Image (cartoon, rainbow, N blue to C red; front, side, top):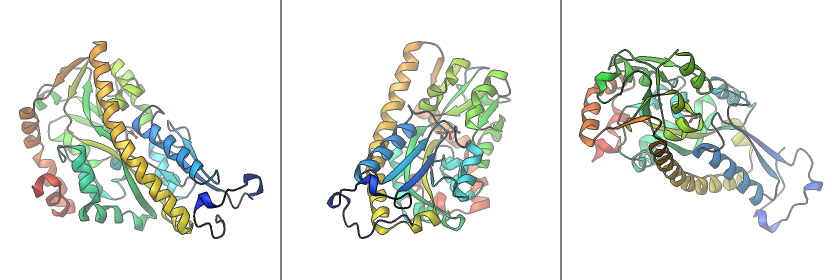
Amino acid sequence: PFFIAACARYEDYPIDLEQLSEEERLVIRFSHVVGEDTPKGMAARKFAELIKERSNGRIEVQVFSNGTLYKDMEELDALMREDVQLIAPAISKLTDLVPELSIYDLPYAFDSLEEVHEFTESEAGNRLKNLLKKHNLIALGLWDSGFKQISNDTRPIEHYKDLKGIRMRIMQSDILAEQYHVVDAIPRKIDFNTVFQSLKKGDVEGQENTLTNITSKNLYSLQKYLTISDHGYLGYFLLFNYDFWKKLSKEDQQLIIDTLKEVQEWQWNLAKELNDQKLREIEDCQCIDIYYLSEEEKKDWEKRFSPVYDYYAHRYGEYYIRNLPKNLK
Ligand code: LMR
């Protein structure tokens, strides 16, 4: 129903929008939970603009940010029901559905964002993405938020032992829970859009996130201490409802794939730049105590977290761990 006949190249056929019936227009509803000024929020807008321009306005990507349409725990179901056609959830939030994906949550699984990208494009990464298909989902790209840092209100976290007894907000992922269990902290799975309230009320004392998320939700205004630990990756799959995707014409699919590829490159640079910029802003504001883990300390933390790898391997096998770039070197 969505197709325009024989549209070989969009620019060859300028479209008179007035002439288009509702059926010929294609609307893609894209819901996400973060602010507009984050790497995800900005890339979503850019993707929508480019698609509109390149389809001469025939394809409209409607972006709903800040969880206004669906919250964290709702957006995946909404996508599976096709109430929305596209979401970009943190991969951690897909791990109840496809637990193998929690490989991305393992502490210090990746030394750099380049390693994350390499892994995602590898045979192991493709195998992982394919697991989503049987849930009627197709992953068509990866956007970065960046590496997570730890903030809290109780004490400076300079050593992993300092995490003992601290109630930490985490995303919905058992591996993230395990990461805190092994250092005797108390993980709590909480919806992203209620983290601020939960910190404020004292339900949790700390949280882990990327600097762009920490600043865009003003979380640091409630926290005394920040540890730059870079201990875990936070990134997103661009997930379409698979039935919806299969109904699109080959030309529309190609346009979306090409545009996503271009936006992805742009987004990766943007995420890096914004996280660096936010770090400088937080340093300059002198409103939170910052501790930077040295490379040596990071190695110590990584060692301490090795039971989390055992937990993963025991449940989901060794294959994905063996294929992490750091283990292939
Ligand atoms: C979180 O829940 O902390 C993040 O997944 C939010 C996001 O989408 O970046």
